Image (tube, rainbow, N blue to C red; front, side):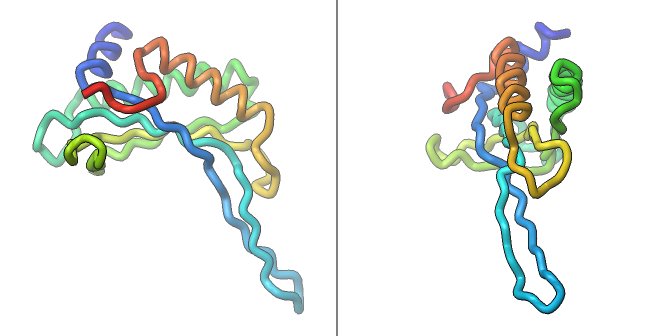
Length: 150
């Protein structure tokens, strides 16, 4: 099965984009003004792949990849002693148009690595380590950071 997932990812020219994940909080002390704070709580790893079908619902391949990525998240979570929250978020009905490739329709799936604990604290070493581990696992599957190879 891992080889099947690799073939699916390669056939859809999957690639990865990483961005910071921010949480915005508002504090209002009694009688005081609202204080807004933006904290980087982790990272979003967005995995894009060329959408091959015109059907609105994602194909079975999409859900196979989703399940494999959930397994990857579980492995990394265990390796990091559950110090970080790692969530796989499907966007099955979402189509992203690749503006750098003639508006090629792309499918999207996200892995969120997030601080596990007080949302007022910034992501730290545990989240950095989890990010590196997820990247390494994705690289083994053939998904690397950068633009599509289409």
